[in-house]
Length: 188
Image (cartoon, rainbow, N blue to C red; front, top):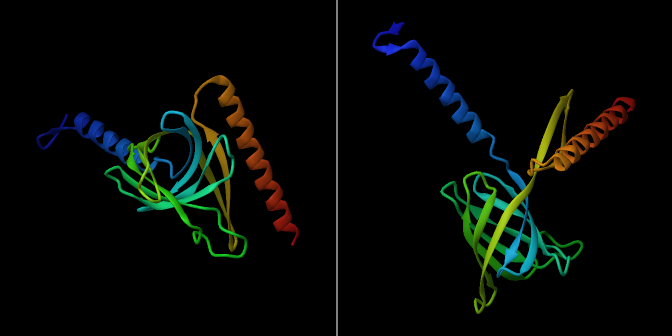
């Protein structure tokens, strides 16, 4: 069957493809947890939240364990630049710590891979780094009267059965906590 010069089936397929493409673009996670290496030997973990053009979070070397804050920018074209800060002392505004280094590189379209170069604050050392997303944080939002509740929980990206089982458990714990909070709210 034709509508004008365009077959209906082709129109439907194009409409479904357009809808799928738009949905896929919206489905890119905005908060991810990464593991990776600096200089192919220093193991790190990094937690990043992406906004329109800003990105922030924290990271730690596995061997040290203390978190460093990171804050910077990213572009949809894939460029990412982060400044690394010492932990902020209690009572001081965030990101007032001394800059100890920076990351610059490329983030994949799906945000699951980041690679580039880490530089010391004085610029004397430059080391390659790679990060791979191992989990994303999901947000379950419930609006109730004048209150909007966000329950945030991690979901591991590995499709192996053990991780899938853990993801179900984490989701269940998050929803149980959300229901318990709703019960507290109802009592007030």
